[in-house]
Length: 607
Ligand code: AMP
Image 1 (cartoon, rainbow, N blue to C red):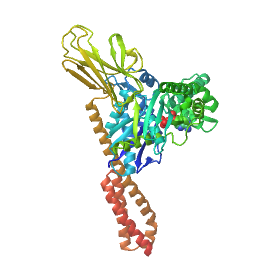
Image 2 (image 1 turned 90 degrees about the horizontal axis):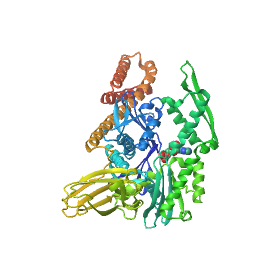
Image 3 (image 1 turned 90 degrees about the vertical axis):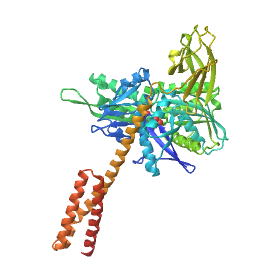
Image 4 (image 1 turned 120 degrees about the vertical axis):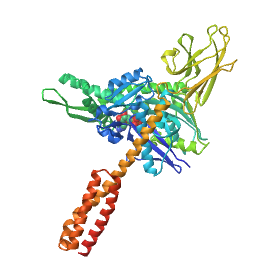
């Protein structure tokens, strides 16, 4: 049976899980960590770095280190979110050829799905190293609030990474799946998910029969841990400006150090009451003098700086309950997801609003990946005892005359779903109609997100109102939309799968897949070389260590001199092979070294 991994592709960190038997396992990376930073960098030598190793070099290579790419995925160049990201990112965000966003790292530009694919590929490698076999299939999670473009772009990222993404599921749904897995109960729960970049809250009904039904879901794709960090950064920068009249924001390296320090302080303040932020040599004054930044931040101050952000999440919870037509008393459990829910003020606000302490049985950083793995296993085993009924987070419709938004599928409709509506032409002898597919809640079409457009041509010439066009919308289980339009009389039809208008072309994806594959081959060969090199170096050090003893025992005998000379020549050859980065030659020398070592040991034992 083919295995499926569940990947939580987070803004800040990512996590991968798999079901072993019936047990979900969160797979650690080589460093032993169960989450891996969603950070990608390119070094001066053009080498790609992903995860902890990329994060560690972020300060010295800020311009070529991408973090929080998830905030940009599937977004259009002219969107306010992208404008905002341009102002706050240390890497350079540029306009792509399809009105999309590209990221410039060194001399190359990358699409956002490509950057995310590097993180996904890393998660794939982590799983493969652990399982000792290739992994192809994956379930990837996205925030419930993601629109169609963002989902499609995430799927593209999976494809580029060489994954067959069998399902995209919503993070809160995944969390509730992990929470309800193996438990036999009926319960109405709220999932409060505050991550690095996004906030979601969903209300779900978990049925003893294994049905997970989302009743409502809402959120804010621009509210998360980084906004908390930004408040600390503002506080530090403003304080520094008052004292020294220097704006630290102008310095990319300083900004990156501030960002790290702010996040660290924030996390520390979840367990201690105050912490010291200490950034020596933060900036040079230009008069051969460097300034230091040193301040104490208390939990109280942090809470004051961020209380409106916490309050915003509570407002969104209120909205989710209203959408679900439920009273707060009807919520029987609250599940916390996302690293930010470790902040005491967040926990307190949640407890106060829901009138109960949140559930602590699930791990906030791992629960989403675990849910994805559970869903993956259920899909592949075709299990019907676990049914996920998700809802569409946004209303879906088309733009009609006068820029009005005509809704076809309301927000929070269970997916998969389809709806049909008949429209008539608005002009005499009209032979074509343009269908603009939109997602959003506003009555004004232009306020909503344009998902795609297409033209239905070849209509019969007839007076206005006489040609009937049937428009059918379909949302599949991944939350991805397709639309069909048909002239009811002639049967003339057009349809589109609303692929991200801000996304990539099939050719681009294919090229990127090839690059990702090249990277994998290169990386595997690097790893083989490193492995052989390490083995050789250990042996070499041991042999070197034995020389004095060998000299003492057999150094005066001819055969002894011979053996010593041979050993020295083997060492030379091994060193040369390492310098030449020749994996095969290093492996050969490892065998020689082993022989030498055995021989030396024999001599010492006899001597
Ligand atoms: P996630 O996207 O779920 O990985 O959440 C990451 C966010 O949680 C980041 O903004 C982290 O800074 C934040 N975070 C992680 N640990 C803590 C902590 N102990 N206290 C407060 N925030 C935290």
